[in-house]
Length: 205
Image 1: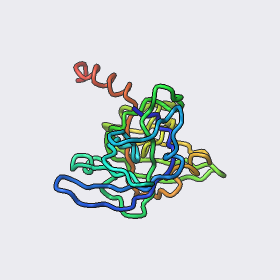
Image 2: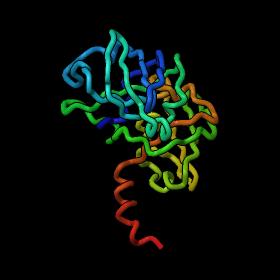
Image 3: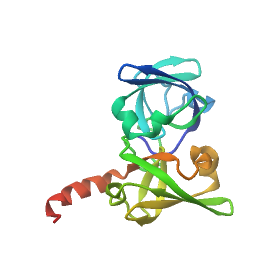
Image 4: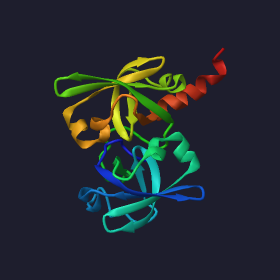
């Protein structure tokens, strides 16, 4: 379980093809290598969200963590398009002592969205995303959404997508500042919306 509050930006060091997917080596920023009461030292087997996709640490080398991503993960996320040098958003799994400052994020990406347009409003940015209709149906204005692992508040919702307002802090600390129109992003909708949608399914015409 995660909060969608990105702890730092890592950098892809290498991608190695494996029989059923790829092995990712991510250079981790110093702030994620430090342990504290809320975040014990990361060990093998721990879960880490990479651009909002929950993966397991399978190896550690000084300032690098390694992960394995299978074909299903690569087909449903933007991890398959990563290249050496690409920055990624990182968040370690939530501990019982940590503050829940974002919202409940599972790290299970529902699908891909595409940056549609970017509107600059002084130091702020309003960013529009195009998504499949099935995902847009689960969103509501002022509700929570996860974009590339970042917990955000939905501003506008249409049948084909949504918008968010990005404050300078979010732009500074995450990869959204370098996103451009046409870029693919990982989308995870609010889990509450998924359950409600499932419960209402038998009554749809």
